[in-house]
Length: 599
Image (cartoon, rainbow, N blue to C red):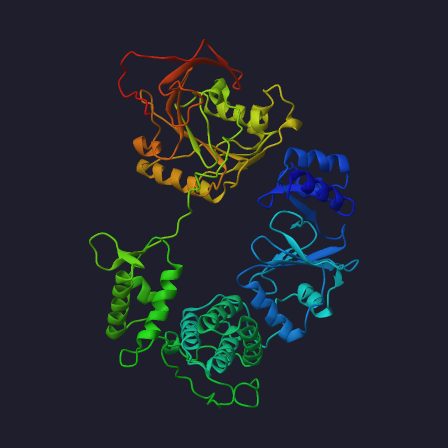
């Protein structure tokens, strides 16, 4: 689709809906959905400025619409379970999302107040209404699959969304955190479902759902965790997801009417194998009776005399699938509830087989420590790429000497009171009208930042950037994607300076095309910030700042044939904001201790 064609479709959509531009589902305008408009001139200006912007559409009372967001992987199964219990949803405007999920648009009844929610209806089912928005077609990756108008939501859906509880009332506790007793029971049931022989899988899921329903009602298992775990096991067993969801809903509904919890302290670490309900209270798929007077459940994990290779393998594979970083066999056994010597031996053998299959490898000299081998990595398409350098303006004309590419990190290592914040705020000022700029500060509050910005010639109302207070774990807060500039002022390090390299790598791994400029403290008499050489590994541009002097320590991408590494410039700072060069960039050839440029 050409840019002109896309623009024409956006303008056409704006004749019916209020729109605003987004990138990676985040608003590009200062006030987000509050800026949404049908004004053709404004919409044209936005999409000419950001020709690939996603189309944000507000929902709620003003539009008379709410949206059911069905996310993968859990949403379709959770929705199928609801429809099996209450009836099908009517056909309505439905968009397939970029990730393969769905946005189903429904009429919001006048006067009905709904709230935005996540997982209220089940795993993978979110509600977007007043104060929320969705990305709409013809945004690339989003396609209408049904487009004959919005339908009225059925009464049962509105009742669930306005009811004080997530699901229909049960006779006992619901939605409690999963207890150790409950977790062992859930893992045992999941194993039984996943390993059920063909021809018995549906019955195994039904009776397991009944057992989990009892324990959810008894406050031993979180409902969402119980449902998602059993449906994952059903998927591993090869059951059809829709049919599995219906079977789970049927068994669970019967089980939650008969709450169950541990009868004694001794039973806490002995979760039950599922008991099939009697014909008086069971769904039609169950037929075996149960002695409900029994209070001595068996253990979740198999004893050594009955442990099967398949059962141990299921738990080992499930643990490895979820593992991050390193893990030990002790942690695996503790997680799975394996406590006997025979079980531990079986786990060791299973891990050894996975080493031979190159699924995991040993870490260090300790035999019991492992890590998952990650073989997938994105290919570098150097033949067809035409990705340009980031369009960024830097103080002192640095952007005329060096280039920064999408996904790059720049480090500004500065002595105290050398002008780090002045440098970074100048970067904000010069780029906030052509890029989405996010400024993270670890020291200044709102009033201090306002005072600092008021010293610039730019009116406060024209500072269209996002300011955030943040002191650590910046990798969790930065905004990813092309066209985004993240400025971190600054990365505080008080001990374990060797960790700086790892922190910069964590930031780099989350950029996905965005740019990060990270300020570090540095000591007098050296070019490198705290962390030393480790802080040099990821940055493609590394600057050293001391009072009145800036130096290019490392520049990997040059604008011309002239090597900028080692170049330096004298400057003055006026009013804490204006950076005035004193002369031209030059290369100091005199020897200085602890000062070094890295090409």
